[in-house]
Image 1 (spheres, rainbow, N blue to C red):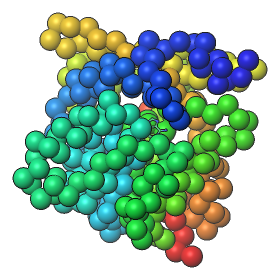
Image 2 (image 1 turned 120 degrees about the vertical axis):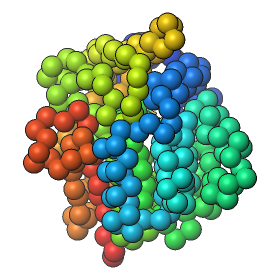
Image 3 (image 1 turned 30 degrees about the vertical axis):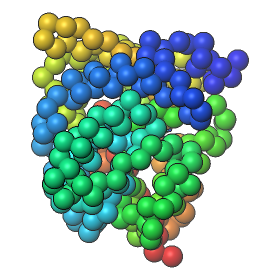
Image 4 (image 1 turned 60 degrees about the horizontal axis):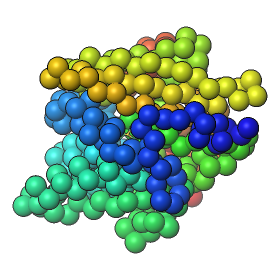
Length: 290
Ligand SMILES: C[S@@+](CC[C@H](N)C(=O)[O-])C[C@H]1O[C@@H](n2cnc3c(N)ncnc32)[C@H](O)[C@@H]1O
């Protein structure tokens, strides 16, 4: 049994499958609907996260941003409000529906009128959006533990490399990719996932039950069952992730961006020297100028 077929045996509660291309775990709309509740008020980012992202983008002189996992549009909207030019893409039309609705509601604001939202898949990203890439973006963002949704059954992680290559192709020389993943090294060691969100000030109790599927003695997939309580209602949805090991992930980034690329690593939006065992790793890798 390959990890890909294991994925289909280990049935997800929220098991949407897109008509073509990559499996859309959000296709039945369940997680999309609950996501809005899960993340709470769109303005209520944790200060750490908001400051980290905005300060970093400004410090690196980034103006044109590509959000490749925009989901319901939560990060993109914050960036538009902060004066950045944003193009947002996602593979799930059920998630995009919420972003499109917000753009329509705020269409009289020039930044929202100019906001480009497209359906696109990381595996074909450059081809999907080459008309809007032009000279390349100043920054590509893939945040919120999104990249780990992409499963890869090949031992060389060919699909992961293909997706990262597409992100790199969308950047201008000197542009940066900001991409995160949960601390799967720790999740595999402890068998549990911290429920508290570092990204959002969600007021709803969220429990995350974690299971790990092994293939040939190696962890192939981590499944998280989210339980959200809001207005006396209990909602549940299940999402599956590829358990990226920190070293392996860093090596893929360096392989695609080249030896000259500057790679910086953060833990929970702080320098790694002050966070020993973070819940999230955030990688910043800069495309060399030549
Ligand atoms: C966890 S949500 C995060 C959304 C948003 N960044 C946030 O923090 O709220 C992950 C998003 O990644 C998208 N996604 C997963 N695989 C994808 C792929 N191969 N191509 C494009 N988007 C994908 C999903 O559709 C989903 O909207």
